[in-house]
Image (tube, rainbow, N blue to C red; front, side, top):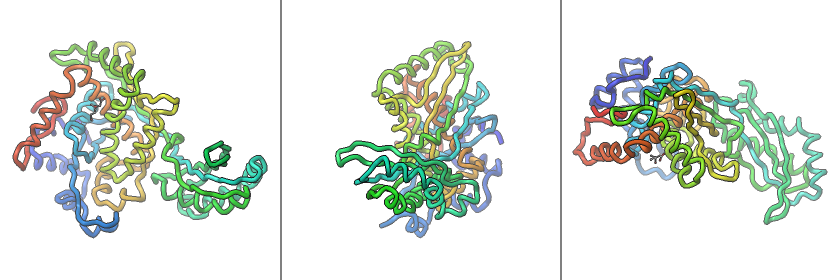
Length: 399
Ligand code: MEV
C-alpha cells in the first residue's frame, strides 16, 4: 500500500472513496457504515447517556505518511479546515527524507491511591513494602485475561506529601495494560487494592484513579529532511529550514508560543485519536502535563539543522489502545484501525507521534514562510460554497 495518493485532495469525494476502495483496506460492510454517520441511534444510546441524536463530523484521510518504512493512511476526524491538508503536506515533506522514524515505550500506566490519616508514615511504608507481592496480586486479581496476555501490575512506589489537609501517602502502581488505553483496568485495580492498603497503613483511602500523566508510556518520533525538499519557487529550501528552526526556538523560550506550537501538534493527534475511538482528552492532559514537567511549559517537539538537513523530534505520553471503550464499540473506530493497519497499541502510539511531528512541521513551514492565513482562507472559502462541496482540501499544492 502506498500512502502517496498524489492528487487525492483534488478528486471529488466519490472518487476519493473509490481510490480508497481500490486499496482493499476495507470490507464491503465498512463502506455501508461510511455512508451515514457510522453510528446508529441505538449504538449512540449505549455509548453515552441522555442521548437525543447524533452529531456528525468529517472523517478524512491524511495521506503521504511513512512510519518506520511503512506507508500509512491516517483516518482523521476534525472540523477545523487545514488540519488534514497540513498533516498530508507535512508527511509529504518528511517523505523526502525517508519518512518518520518512531518508537514507543511498553504500555505502562500509573495508578494512584491517596491515603490520609496515616498514624505512622515510616511504619506504613515498611508494611506496604513487606506486602509488595500481595498488593501486586490484589491489583492483578480482577484481570485474569490481562495477566494471561503478559500484562499486569509491575511496580509500587510510595511518597509522603505535605498538603493543605495534612500529610498524605501516595501509593502508585505501574501496570502494563497491553493493547488497552488502560483507564478501566487501572481504576479497577486501584479500587481493588484500597482495602488492603488501608489495612497495612492504618490510614483512610480517598482517591483511587489512574494518572493521565502517562510518562512511563512515551512515544517518540523523528525525521530528517533535506533542506532542498522544503523549498518552493518563492522560498529556497535552506532559508525555509533556517526559519523553521528559528520558529521552533521561539517555542523553546516562550510558554505562550509553546502552547500554540503544542496545540498544532495536538490538532493531528486528537483527530486521529478521535477517529480511532481513543480518549483525546486523556492525550491532551498527558501532553500538556508532560510539556510542563521541568516546571516551565515547553514544546513537545523541536527542530534543528544537521548537515544541511532539517531534523525534527517529538516525545510525549501516548496512552492509546485498540481494545475497550469506543475503539471497538464505534463501528467507524474499528474501521479506522483497519485503515491504519495497526496490530498493537504500540503501533498506534508510534503513528500518532509521527502524525504530531508532521502536523507541527506543516504548521511551522507555513508560519515561517507565507503565514498560515492564505491556506486557511482558501479552505474557509469552501465552507461558504453551497453543498455538496465536491472540491477538496490542499496539501500544499492547489488543484
Ligand atoms: C492552528 O490550529 C494551529 C497553529 O496555530 C499551530 C502553530 O502555530 O504552530 C497553526
